Image 1 (cartoon, rainbow, N blue to C red):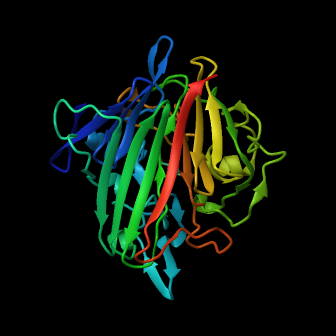
Image 2: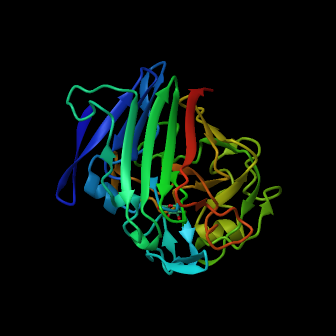
Length: 342
Ligand code: GLA
C-alpha cells in the first residue's frame, strides 16, 4: 500500500506500507524511515513506533524518528576524523560536533524505491528495498557510497539490512532511529513504564556535548544497570552525574552479543526483542522529544530509541572499534525487531 506523506523540498513524498498479517510497517521514501509499526494483538493492531504524517515536518523536527541514519550514527567530536593520514572536516550540526551524519544526513534525502511494483497504487508486499547514492565529499565524508536498505517482514519480525559499498576507504556506521512505546505510541503518554533489559555489562560514559570520554564503565551499582528487567524510567530521575549530563539516558551500551535488548509493556502485553551484528546499543530516553508528530505534540519521554550502532565517536576514540568501510569491499549490517507477547 502506498500513501501520500506530504512534500519535502517541493517533491511529493510517500509512505510504503509492508504487511503480513502480524505486522504492518510504514516506511517513508524521505530518510528511508520507519513511520509506524503496527503489531497485531488479541484486540487489534497497536502502533508502537511513533512517526509523522508529513515529510516536511518530520525532516525538520530534529527527532530522527525512525530514520535511516548515515553516514555515521551518533556523534563525531570536533566534526573531524583522520583516515589514511588525511583529516576530513565534516558538517557541524551539534555544537562543534557532527551528529547523525551532519546537517544534510541521510534523514534529509529522498531514497529511491527499488521494489518492483511498489510504485503502483494496488501494491501489497512484505519487503521493501530502497537505495541511496551519497557522493564523494557528502557532508565531508570520503568516497562515493552506494547504500541499499532492505526492510523485510518474516512472521512477527521486521528485519533491516544495510548493504554499503564505497570507492574509497571511509567510515560507515548506520542505525535505525526508531522510537518505541510498547504500551501504544501516543503524543502525551510516558514510555517510562515500559520494562527494559539491555544485554550489556558496561556502558560508555559521556562528557561535554555528550561525547564519550573513552571510558568503558561497569553498569553494576549505577542507574545504567539494565541487566535484569526494570522499568525504563525507574531510576531516570536519580541524582547521577551521567543522567544529569544527558537529562536522562542518552548513552551507548557495550553489547555482550547479538541479542541486544528486550522490552515489554505490561499494559499491552507487547514484547520486543532486538538483535544486531553491531557492537553497541544507544539508549536514548527521548529527553529532547517535542514537535508535532502524527499523534500531536510529542512529549519528552513519550517514547525511547534503542539504536543498534557502532559506539558514538568511535571515529576518534582509538579503543572503540572503528566503523571502517574499505574501498571496493561491500559491507552488510543487520538489525532485527522481533515482536511477541509477554
Ligand atoms: C540521538 C542522540 C540524542 C538526540 C537524538 C535525536 O539519539 O544521541 O542526543 O540528538 O538522537 O534527537
